[in-house]
Amino acid sequence: MSGNSNISEPDLTPMLDMVFQLITFFMLVINFKSASLDLNLKLPVVGSARPLDIQGVEDFLVLNINKQGQLVIYGTPTPVDAYLSNEARVSRRRLPAAEQADPNAELPTSIVIRADKGAPFQDVNRIFTECQKRGFRKFALKAFNREEDPGA
Amino acid sequence: MSRRKKKKQAGEEVKLNMAAMLDMAFQLLTFFILTFRPSPIEGQIDLNLPPPIAVAQSRPIEKTDQGESTGAALPGFGTLVITVNAAEDGELSSLVLGERPLLRGRLRPGDLSALDRELQNIFTLSGGTFDAIQLHVDPKLNYESFLLLMDVCARQKTEDGKKIEKLSFIELGAK
Image 1 (tube, rainbow over the protein chains, first blue to last red):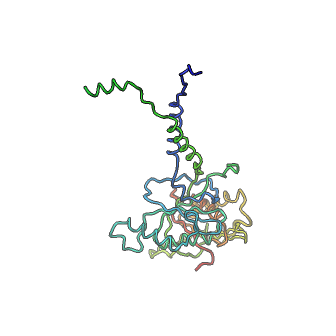
Image 2 (tube, rainbow over the protein chains, first blue to last red):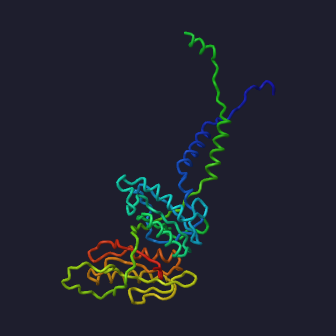
Image 3 (cartoon, each protein chain N blue to C red):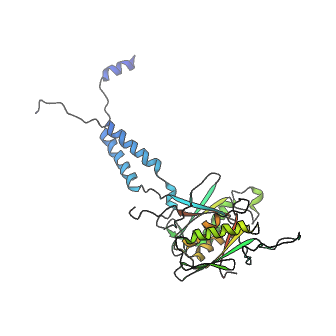
């Protein structure tokens, strides 16, 4: 035993290569924006809903509306008025200086509505109306293209 | 020269401790695997919605003779009103196209196709009378039914093949 001084060491380089490739993959596919999406919502299923087209859209604001009709931001029910007023103020700053003072100017932000399929229309409409009052004009209503796999 | 000497003197291979790096890499990998949540594929319906103005109902199908009048059009003229009523559970209970009842009871699979055909007929036969749709929606209606109806309306085209861009909705009973 003592005479045998050879220590066999496995070559870890290929394994490390593979692990780094996997890490790279997961780093690339991670989507931090999904944090703003409430994935517990059951969106309606509309066959003709098209994938998000972000060409020409400078900025968008995602509004999650739960089954009770509450506005949910990062998992917390949030008062509509205060939140939208703040967002409208931020969006207004992106307008050309000449238009910023115009209360009827169309804001450059698109509102993305992600509402639960059971949310009552009156609550969704209240949020639409509040957005329109503050100058938001472009809306995108989110839906699934097809029924989600219940096993997923 | 001194550098060469040093190299020669060293003469030993520097071995990196791969195990430590591998440990760290595996920890990172575990983190990414555990936090990985593929987001479902979501589609969307794009709308341009200025604040709606409530309009009176116009009669569908019947072509209105405007004569030679060059005066300003009445507000809401040319807007097809669709009234949507809901049951207590939020499901659609009836749908009225202008003044004509079209659907009664819950939405069944073929109902939306029927509505689509009906709207296509109206926009084709009206000879340009209608260029806008306004939904008068029961506050209790669930969002899914509302979105399905909006989807059908957003697909409509005028006689000359242009998409209906004037699409709006108001809450039934709201002033």
